[in-house]
Image 1 (cartoon, helix red, strand yellow):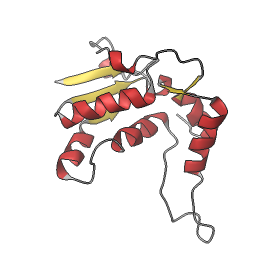
Image 2 (cartoon, one colour):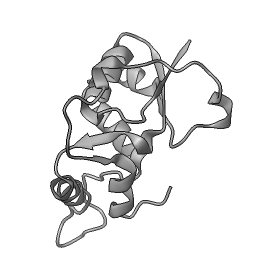
Image 3 (cartoon, helix red, strand yellow):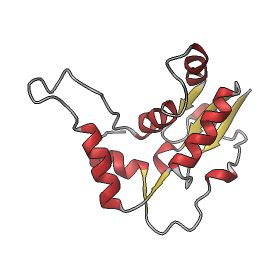
Image 4 (cartoon, one colour):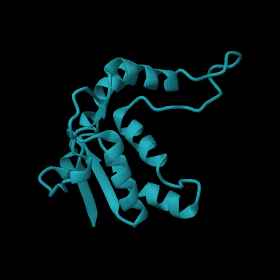
Length: 142
């Protein structure tokens, strides 16, 4: 059975840690509305942090050297979860393959039951930015 989680209004790190634990327990998880996941903090700092990650490259050969960092909101979330699981080991790779992340709501998932994640709800967050906004500032088209 696939667990469907709506990412709208949930905090990125808290959601990613909850999802990574569930993935390691063997669940299949699908995230919808990845562009509406929020990142808490100052908008300028958030943008600068992600821009610095995307712009990392070598001076002599900027196209070949990495690490390559994603710009799309679904890929950014997948990368965040990947950092929380041992993806280089067999059980980590198997768990990572059970994660599906979608921008918006796909037609095949409309009307299905969505699981609430209480741990990822924002608490006392005054400054935040949506993942979709960060992606657009980084130049993503989705």
